[in-house]
Image (cartoon, rainbow, N blue to C red):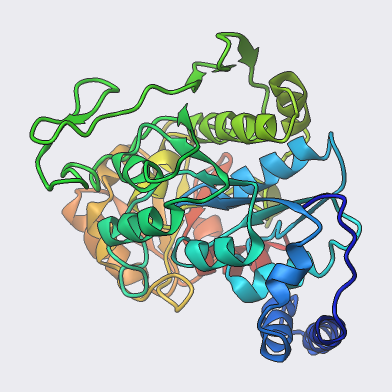
Length: 412
């Protein structure tokens, strides 16, 4: 726990040193940050390293399908009001990346760690977190990750009897099912725009009833818990009924929901909502997300969306027609190689926008847009798309590796 300055074992020190050396060599060779390969080497030398690196920290783990990186960043900014924070701010969220991040936190008090949904149980076992934030569950990378209901069941088993405070989204039935095995849950009404993965009851398989913002199963009685924190318009409502204004530089309803969850997490660590929310205003962009850049004499806003739920939220952020929109889709290992999810996205929401399609799987997306009755142009590169786009700021929406390609090309 925080304040415990137990030194690392000789084996752990060797593993950390070796990991940093490999990471430095990777960076020197131009192969990225080196955090993943460095973490892998360190864990190979000391399989217990993650737990050792976390032993002096008060740790919060953040997991879910969408919003992990942004929420992690907002929580980290909030907790800096109470002490130094170490965090995997760039989103390397599997054990190797987490290990590399924590290796830099010897002087920190708090660890704010984003965790891939599939690895939550193992990381929680290793680092013994004080808090776990569960945001949402929806289909994503179906070729790699478990089906959402199986994932919720896995979370539920791992959270049973946990000592951590679980901060969970009361509006997502799958998250509620997973979290309700925990003895200490703080429920947050963060909303759920995408509902298509939660129409059947995770408890009994019955059909979920969803009147308004409420939900319940008519067969077994499984229902939405009463939240103690809530997003209400532009305010966070705390457990005492006080309303705290949300002032973010990040756009959209989803980020207000992320801020609400972050305020609830900060309160577990003794940071009041007013202080937490004021500090969140410092965040202008998260690993390039929401950045506005100049490229070829044009202004581009960079937006990341990786799955149907993410694309639905992102469509609500973009400027009204006739703002041009570039859509970029890849299907590499980090994205998931299955592009069938494109058919779950409602592209009719883009009607009236001039659309330009790029990326490795631009033809897959083109077929989907054709069926949706949209007018678009397929381009070989972002350069071509920018040249063809009509005047005005251009919105760019890309999935994970397409987003990284885009950032490299536009110099962000």
